[in-house]
Length: 189
Image (tube, rainbow, N blue to C red; front, side, top):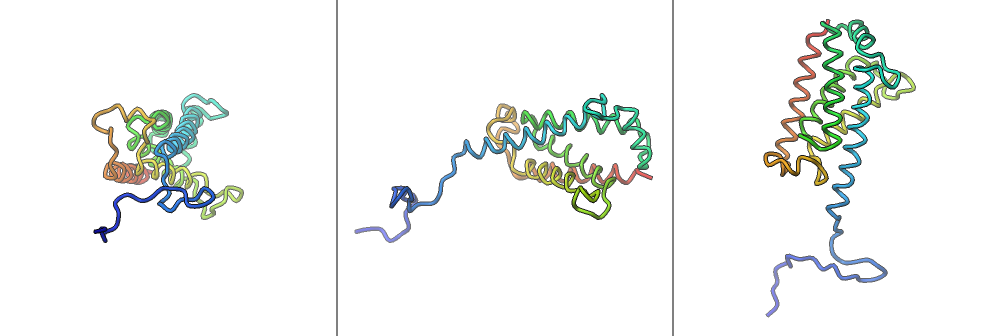
C-alpha cells in the first residue's frame, strides 16, 4: 500500500526543457565562492583604506594627517586614535579577506565604519551630495559577513573553535562592533 505521507526526498528528474519538479538546489561551492568574493572585496578595501591612515599610501594623510583630521572631529588623543583606526582597518580587513576570526574581523570593520558614518553624516544618502552611501554599504556588508560566517574558503575552517560558524557568534560580533563604536563616539568632544 502506498504511503500517504510526503516524501522526504524531492524529485529532481527533469520534467521538460531543462526544468525539474523539485526545489532548486544551490551548490554549496557557489555560496562559499560568493562569500569569498565579498570577503576579499570588503577586506582588501578596508586594508587599503587603513594603509592610507597608517602609511599615507594611496594618497592618504598618514598618521599626522589622519590625527589632525581626528582632532578636528573632536577625538581625544587624536594621533593615538588615528593609529588605532588604521590598525583596526588594516588588521580587520586582512583578517576578513583570508577568513581569520571572520566575525571579529567584521566587527572591527563595522565599529570603525560606524565611527566614520557618525563623523561624515550630513543627512544625505548619496555621495554626490556629501552623503554616506559608501559607509552604509560597508557597514551592511560587514554585518552581513559577521552573521553568515566566512564560508568554506577561509582560515576559520581550520580552527577548531570557529570551524562551524554559528549565528550566535555573528550576532555577538555585531553587538561588540556596535558597543565599541558607541564607546568611542561617547569620548568625542
